[in-house]
Length: 444
Image (cartoon, rainbow, N blue to C red; front, top):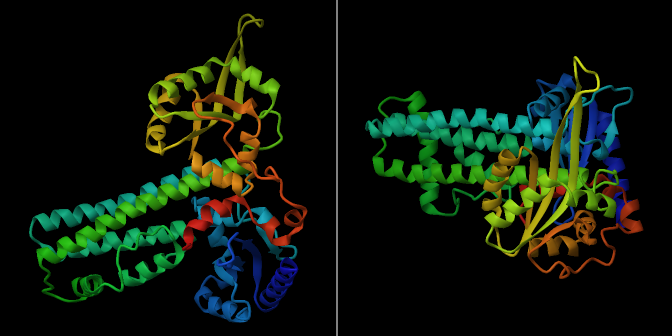
């Protein structure tokens, strides 16, 4: 009954918005937890490019009777440009299965043809590198002028470093940056959109309130006034905040990339295609693969903690170069891709992160290691995760059992959704992308 009601609400919302405004597409992000709002990603006509700021409050007011729905508005061509630049939020939000409205006769497609997960990931990393370079340049300027005793200039460099960091995180998380020089505004905005933001500033703490005000004064005074002064002790306190923000920014980026990777694997590796496991015949062939054997042996030698290894993805790409002189002679070239799930009792993520590139370089293969602790896996099984049930239910995919492999407690549905779940409109609109990527943007 609730799902029927939500579907009716959604139809009313779409009808209201599209009857008043020129909308290209609307996508729906849903969440498993009742406390979170549904999120409407609204791509508006390009004609609103100069008036989007005025349009957004009008759209919000149009659906004010439905507080459980949150709107995120983007100009259509700008959203497409951001996706092509590697914005993960829009890439995951604008997936075809989430589309709930498409303008009649519109040929607009936000995700370009042949633009896949790997391409988006590469561009995301490249974008992060470019933004980080800008941030590092201002940060180096801060330390340079601070060392020279030019504290006013140093404070401006610090302000710019902090502001650019906040702006990048906003783009990463919701593809929108706050156009303001106020660090307080950026702090509050990031606190609103991300659950893993460490809240570098505490707006209830007197000392932090003072520091936020000093940052406001720094930008205004150094840009528009003469003879601004600040002491080294205050700069040192701000420096601690700057470094804390940068450390947290690295954690947020890593978390997003890990979540995106896992979501992609759950959606694309565990399929019914013949080159994916499980399958006894396929497993037998895998046992004979020397590269895979070597990779497992290197993991066993390098890791002191007991662990299990499951194979959940395998691909081999081969081609032959025919001989130019003797047509019967040919040279075969084969590239191997192995996706392994590694499970241990304690956290060995850092060790695996170091081992993965080393093994790939030594063996000349493409090895991807997906890591979870036993407790994390059991929680996913309790949630009826399709991915973990398909990998763990049969021992055909088990390559190394350093832990007890029969200790899992499987869900009664074994990863299969109930009929009610399968037929539910909102359930169909949801995907693992949002479960992994979007959940980090909200507080528990």
